[in-house]
Image (cartoon, rainbow, N blue to C red; front, side):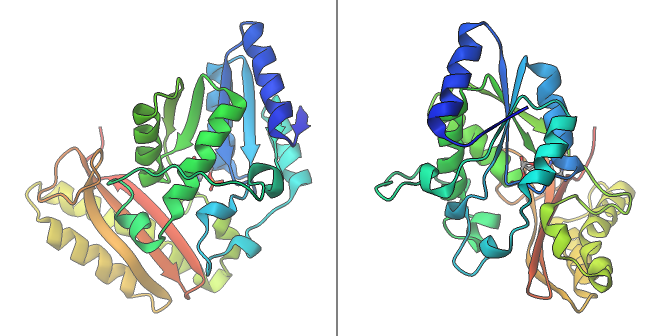
Length: 284
Ligand code: AMP
């Protein structure tokens, strides 16, 4: 595996791969790899000849009072893990080369970014789409794999790719969870032992919602949201950012529960740790 740190260098590799007829898979990440990241990499690896993983803690997608300065980072650790799953190029660019002083462009997707995480993290998705557009142009992938863990992000990226005609296929990967049910996340490293029960209230909320729907297919959206919210708020550490049931494509609130309904959750634990999770209400 090679470690690459500049757009010029990564683009040269990508052009060279393409000239030789190789297909390229990209997995964009912010590092501190866990099994969720690694399974995305394995999926991309099985679908393409060359696997590029980007590692960039993108300042443009963090708000001023968010955890940019605390975000876990260990390049040696991530290099080791990436090498073990067969990554060809680990692309870890410096902030100064991604966003030189004169940088002046923003990619903005309207509509899909206005609610949910976009509502509580203004500007977040502009940061995401801008950096992903840059990464696509730098790494020239045939496919890019994103996790369903960031459900809204996936919908926003798909829209950007369609609207801007990026010649890249977006592949979704299901959420990878701990045995406890907790969705894997680099931010889980912030959790103290005594915050674990609160953190598990998201996946437990999903299980409760599914049970409610299973026992009554005509259960109302309000009843499910109220039940899940009450459960989460029974942990004094939890503050709800949002609990909503939305259509999986439009992300608009559902008026009734169908096979297209997704429960989406964002919860802050002890005002420090913001966790998200989601699930289709009716699987299969
Ligand atoms: P991040 O490093 O958190 O920006 O995540 C990089 C990619 O990994 C994104 O496409 C995420 O959706 C995906 N990802 C993160 N956690 C998980 C998980 N638990 N299961 C599946 N994909 C994940």
